[in-house]
Amino acid sequence: GDSVTQMEGPVTLSEEAFLTINCTYTATGYPSLFWYVQYPGEGLQLLLKATKADDKGSNKGFEATYRKETTSFHLEKGSVQVSDSAVYFCALYLWDTGRRALTFGSGTRLQVQP
Amino acid sequence: EAGVAQSPRYKIIEKRQSVAFWCNPISGHATLYWYQQILGQGPKLLIQFQNNGVVDDSQLPKDRFSAERLKGVDSTLKIQPAKLEDSAVYLCASSLGTDEAFFGQGTRLTVV
Image (cartoon, rainbow over all chains, first blue to last red):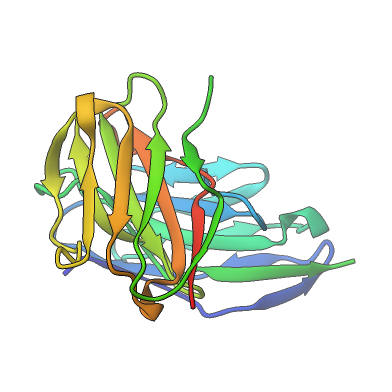
């Protein structure tokens, strides 16, 4: 079945450090890929998305590139802030199946220390 | 634009009791989802509606869970009877039928 695998957390970084959170996927078709973020006590918010190979999604300094050859969509940020502390979820969406819903990874908690 | 509204935010019940959650999607969104998020895991789809019809309920434990979306707008998710393993956050999301879904803040259920 379709699935998403993320690196386990927590990831603990100092402010202004470089961030990478790995995400790989398995899909029967050609998915759209997403990163969602969940701040403490809040719901999931869309952070960025990419819909085809080699597309780069970006938002708030975060970036991720859709790599079809490695079935990956790693999240990166050049300089993290304390306010980036949250749980990050990688997800996929398949258009060409009857079930058109997001499939999520298990999430990666990011803790940024001042 | 108002977001997805869910209530209650928190609920504590004893096992074998029943509980219901309510969701009001973004106006005009035909697609509505209920997800279950167990602590430390990613959200798992329970049921998906298109207007007031069920598109996918393959992962809904139908012996105890039920959901409805009357008139194609609001939705309720019910658990009866609850088990300890049902402790989770229940997330409602809605979409215009595209790949982008908008999530509510969720209802945190604790079964004791």
